[in-house]
Image (cartoon, rainbow, N blue to C red; front, side, top):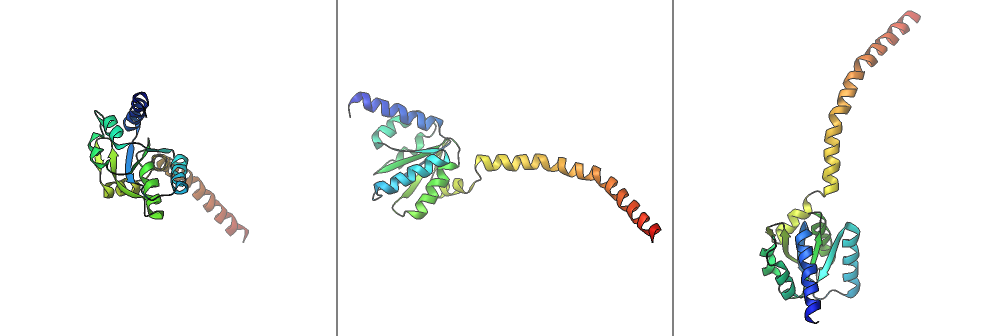
Length: 171
């Protein structure tokens, strides 16, 4: 790899570190090509990405970035899983680690916060952005539905009383 290629890789990694909501660092030694492809596909479907890069180039790319504190995790054969959504990469990495014991999560970063493996698990347990949006929409819509039911209730109560009176007269 010549100097221009290395500079391009550093620039790409710098963009990943700057734009990602979360970056998960893991060891992948012993995974087959098929297992790695499966991991890449899972991450792509979820909206994230996977990148294998030389640790030295990744450390250079981390300089000056908010997540620079995770440079100490870059030792051995490491793979970076990242996503703009702060939860997606952590969830997919955790699920993949359950199926493949050779994939060992070392930690990661979420903004300026450096995460240990337990921190990645905690992030993975959080609801995703879409789930949070659905919950908020449900909370916003709930009072309106309750108000509509309350407004309609007196009318239905009167209709029920009138029906009961009508049935009594008929009997």
